[in-house]
Length: 326
Image (cartoon, rainbow, N blue to C red):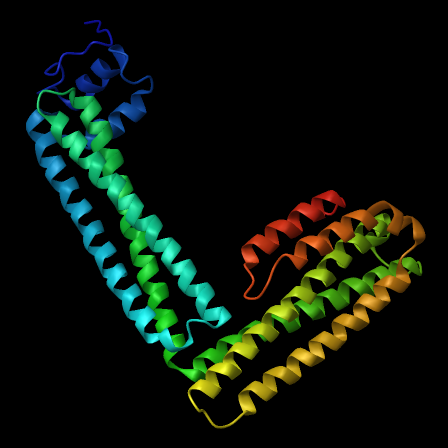
């Protein structure tokens, strides 16, 4: 039987799955049989598509949406608790940054939930007397979105729990800053290796980097500049933690002093590597990428601690492409 796009509401009601798939494709509601099958399986029971199954499926979808609502409410309550716990230090850069990020994420979850609730109400209103396939498509999409909203709310709760531990425990704060210093020191070491390879290649003793010394030099110069920002960022966080200690009248400066020494050492090594890169540069190299390096410097100056490192990484990749290092 040939069908057009004007499928009547009951056309596939009671059909077995294979027949319903053929009818949907023949009626022009779906071009791909595999997609049609995946959608109809969502509203099929024992291999049969029916309006009754659509109703029960919508009931299940409503429960998934209700779970997303509950998880969103829990995230909202936890965010309020975190704000209260951090109220005495919420003006410090790191704390202010994280609280703003958490609020933005919650706002996104809440907006997603409102949209989801509207879509569920709409598909439920159309379920009686509506095209089974259209309702199945919308119900499946609502369920998928509900799962995404719930996942985002759950992930936010986990991150809020971690942040609350960070707020409540001084050693955790310094330990996590120490982890950042570990990453900084590794980056400095990697940068040192890169500078060594450029130096060896310039002397005729290097490996494949010699094939494009100007690009290697430009790429490494970008990375040196980014590490300068990394140093500024960790110094800013250390300053916040020291202010935090003062407000909580915490005795003992060993943790902060040890971290400051490591930052100073990394800073000194970065300066040394930057000077060496400068000495290795040929005038032609500067002429070809000098403007790009200056522009990168200007962009980095727009970032202030605490730094959004995702945005910095995207900026770096843009300039790596400009100097041919991607």
